[in-house]
Length: 107
Image 1 (cartoon, helix red, strand yellow):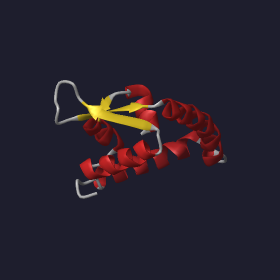
Image 2: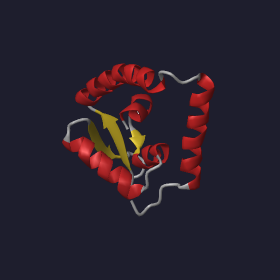
Image 3: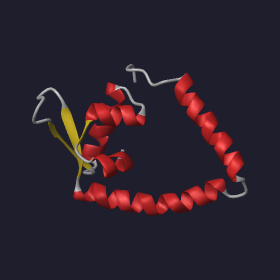
Image 4: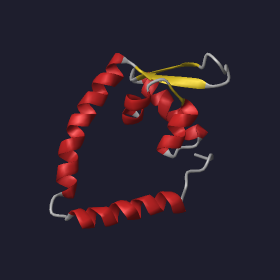
């Protein structure tokens, strides 16, 4: 969610859910937890009062910066010892799992 909002701050909850492959209950629970942690703020959409938008807080932006820096090191460790072709196969397999087992709204 941090990475998504880093590029889409103020996105609709439904947009965030689609990007993260989460149904409405899943994204709502995630936003609830992030809101309690002070990472995001949620507010009504100005055009559609039934929809909510999510914005990063200052603490959320700080967490995003920290996560980006840690991600580079983590990716290097995870892919160490594998060729680019091998990593491509793993990425293709993981993507196929998302296609074969899409998130449902029952989350």
